Length: 504
Image (cartoon, rainbow, N blue to C red):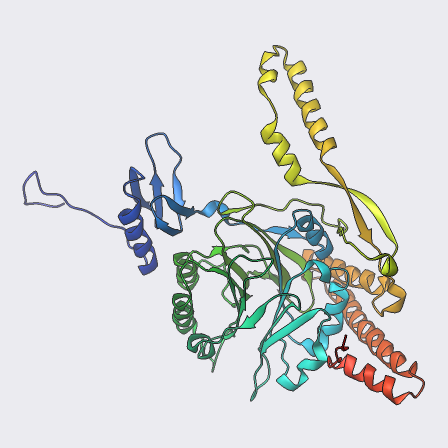
């Protein structure tokens, strides 16, 4: 009970908010009061409404220069698809011709799993633009042994101790350069590789790619607060309107709503970065219990872009792949679309090849989703209002959609590579799929020791066979040189990633 005072005395009670949330609320009231009639806070969320009867929007961040040009980022944009096949995911985004396709995986040991990584990416490299690998656990002199054809690698590796590290593979044809600042090189709570994708035929303006690996503990201490402080310094040093892609293994479980998670998400929301991954990225069985966590993150700041994201439920070590596809300036501002696709769909891509190097190909009809959207927007639905019978209305509406979809199919070419010339075979791919199936069966019954033994034995067999096939292929390629010293050294340099460019 409150006593004293007069009838004209008012008491205002404010919610307890974080520093970043208060900053967003203050900026929202300061710059949007003339546009929105209602701006308030409820349960820690900042809500706005233009007028009575209008839709209420939850604001997570503001990106604008003036009142006539701003974007509101709300919680409606946070979701990711869950797919079982990397090829199936890439097939779905290739139909939309994305401008940037990013793939990230924590590999734990590149020396142990590099061969399996090549098997997994064998049919998919042409659709991927950036590959980020965290925790490769290699030294800088060993980097030449782990080159991917068609990609240039930038790295952060440890010198005096094992573990950790970050590798960023970017397309050779892209204008990518390392951007080292005092804030990125001086990080102590995480390992960072900062890449700038300069202007070119693909991008109208530079894009900053921040690839991070944050160890769960440093000197037996969980330095999350220090990491958030260093991350804020990095984001503050970047231009405010520049496009940013942040990804990596952060070792902050987004499925656990702890104070550190809230502070981390609020920090990224303050700078306009949108969460693209919110599903389980690591699933393991400990003491007969399934432990799920979301440790691998992708955050993107890209106004006027379409973003698709997915967790590919295929693991090399103990983390799933995570991926994001970005399409610039071809859709309404700041929207993210959910990917809907068959889990085991096959990859197709329209590729032009010269007649001299043509390979066998098959044709396949693929639905052009962009054309479907355009035709639906241009369709005249007023004619349907004349129907009185519900059945006739249904048939007319159904026939309209059938005609639109039939007109929007296009033919794409599926290239079939000559796999006899490479050590990656269909048998290896089938074994990897069978290994994943056995792990899924074990996860349904974690305490079943028979299923656990079946999975571990088959996993070890699969790993040994992949490494054996790769080693046998390298040995045979050297034997085929027939003691020609020149050819032998050419093969060795090719294996080490030191292939000389021919002068033309």
